Length: 244
Image (tube, rainbow, N blue to C red; front, side, top):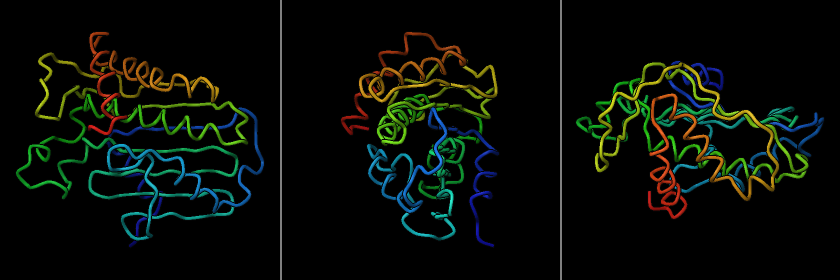
């Protein structure tokens, strides 16, 4: 039986996942001239700084990925090893992206050798320190691009949350980095990282700062403090310079 969007959404929600919602300030009846335009919009605005774009735009329709153009929206999903995500862009201008935490699916990923240390990471046990910074930075860069679409009229509503994270610990899964020695565990199961209205101008000027603040806000739920800021900023710099 072939997978569909709902199957992938259900799978994503069984473990940790990001949820991003972008929507217009005012209701819009016809955001696109045609829903098929969404393919070009995502292609032109996705972020590809570390191999796998944010968000991913499926290139084929098969059991691992699919893009489906409907009368009022475009649905897409990817279910490929540890890369599991879905997104929908509605004719109303609302964009919803669900993105499974990669660290929760590494144990089952065929991308790595069976004896790789990555395949020893248990699902729902950790939050990757560096990966969190990179994901939020990619999100904000994509959000900045999308906010420039004319029908948003220079302002968007934004909500970003991280879900199913209770009791997991912050760790660096990159073995070249110094490990965390403290017990930095989540104190809640869901974190609303951002829930705010932004203008395109402020996003263009400060998207890195917004991503940094969102990352630090999230990390504080794990017990980390402002001493993490220099590392967050350096990781952002390396990402933009394609050194990660």
